[in-house]
Amino acid sequence: MGGGIGGNMGDMMSTVGTAVFADDYSIPSGSSFSFHGQGFAPSEQVVVFANGSPIASGMSDSSGNISGSIPAVNSSEDTDYWFVGQSSDNKDSLTISVLDQNDENDSGE
Image (cartoon, rainbow, N blue to C red):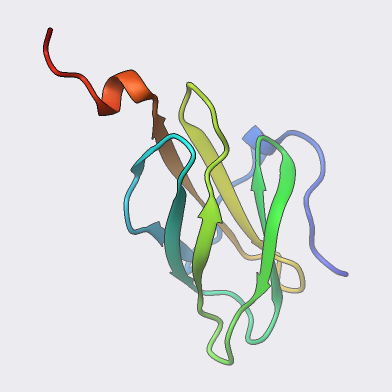
C-alpha cells in the first residue's frame, strides 16, 4: 500500500484539486455523516483518519470520486477527518461538530 500517514496529523496539508465535503457539518451525538469528494486517483483505496487513527476506508470510482457515510467520532470538540488516497497521497480534510444531548434538546429553560 503506497501513500499513507505518519507523524503529526496537524502537519498535513490538503492536496490542490482534492476536495471532500460533508452533507452536514454539525450532527447529533451517536450519528453518522455523509460525505462526497473528488480529486483522488481512479479506483484507489482512500483511508479516513480521525484523531490520527484510521477509522474507515473505501475505493474511489473510475473518475477518482468518493462518497459514503461514516459514524462520527464521539467528542465534545470538533473533529478533523482526513481522507487520504493510498496510491496518489492526495488528501483533504473536513471538520465535524458533534452536538451533545443538551445542545440538541435545549428548551430554553
